[in-house]
Length: 107
Image 1 (cartoon, rainbow, N blue to C red):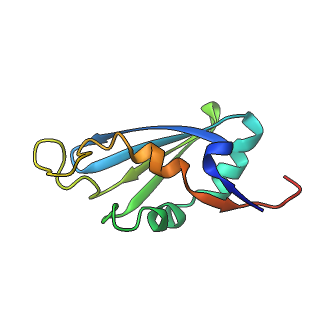
Image 2 (cartoon, rainbow, N blue to C red):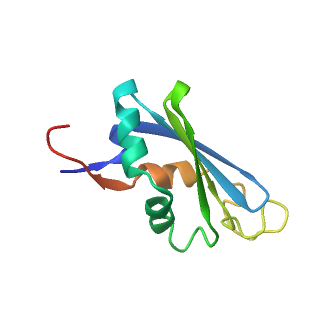
């Protein structure tokens, strides 16, 4: 069964230089295991094709039911250098929450 990530999580994003930062937080504690399973570095990198030109790093924050992703080389050089509309990565969380994931129907 396909769902949109927004159904089980919310997110915040920002930047440090040319690296976008996206935090994804489970809406319920039981959804955290789904985030761990389905939001791999590879899957997030694929979702951000054309936006994230560098590597993706994932950090797990189990005590708050969240994952944090660093999207390297995503902001055209960052706020002071980039000509992108979103040089500070504020909309990256919205992009992340539109990701479709396939989960087992029993969930």
